Amino acid sequence: MMKDLLLVTGGAGFIGSQFIRSLLADAGTETCIVNLDALTYAADLANLAPVAADARYHFVHGDVRDAALLARLFADFPFTAVVHFAAESHVDRSISAAAQFAATNVVGTQILLDAACAAWRQADGSMLPGRRFLQISTDEVYGPAAGGCSFREDAALAPCNPYAASKAAADLLGLAAWRTHGLPVMISRCVNNFGPGQHAEKLIPRMIRCALAGEALPVYGDGSARRDWLHAADHCSALWGLLVFGKPGEIYHIAAHDEYSVLSVVEQLLAQPVLAGGRIAFVADRPAHDMRYALDDGKLRRLLGWQPRHALADELPALVAWYQEKFRHGADAAFAAAPLFPPAQR
Image (cartoon, rainbow, N blue to C red; front, side):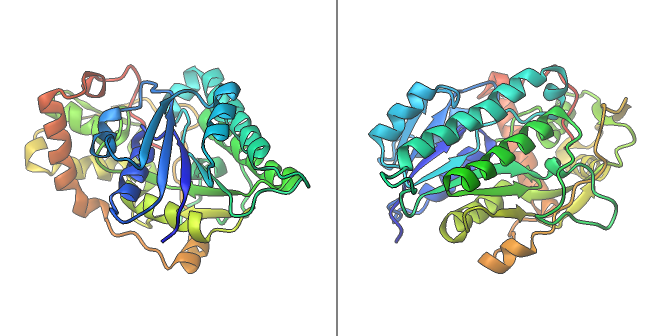
């Protein structure tokens, strides 16, 4: 069994918390996790309640832009790996508040890279052996994919919105740290995630909340934008595989090949009995809306023998029930409240 001490940034977010829960669900694992999270609006410590008392888990409230804090953490904990989830991630918010995305996603990533370089650099300038830095990125960095085509890892970056541009910049900084300093950076780029615990500004929970509240379900344009849907648990199993078997300096795609239009996803939600009667309202499309994302993930599948275990259509009944329970009990008022932005339809 591998012994590791991981620094997970943004571990109170949707995918970060799924990663921590999934890893610590194995009672036999000797891996320990320090979770650094600024607890911004999209974070939810309730997602980590199952592991909060686990001796292998430690939470630190802090920001990846705090260089002094990072230096202390790397001095106090002999991290063997960094898994960098922390990011502003909502496209619509990036359109109206791009500076915040640049500050967190770009500057914050560089400060974290600097901290890892300083902590892991040996006297001869080389990096401590066995260290890994996994930068969690997105399919959006490539811009829209033509119908029937999927991007490979060597495709040109062509982001169309501030969020995607900030993630592309962070990826390039990570690769520069590998080439310049030998920091063992790997980059994963993933398709749309779904699952329990996602913030209500995202498409599926937003549509469920609107339908349960008797509100119209707002869909951009004609709803023809297409996305590939991957369950967060499947995403996280691939990430763990990359930490163990991935190669520094490489980019890896994670995809489900479970593609639907936004309108189809909403219609499938409304086909669930508890949401029947919901009404779709088509709204003006957002600026620079990418109509399709698609990734070729053959490289990762060949490396890991990995494949997703959860299909969107199969998971929707249980997912609707989960969010219905969440909203009914008002366990998180911020989660249940409608955001002041249109629905995210990455």
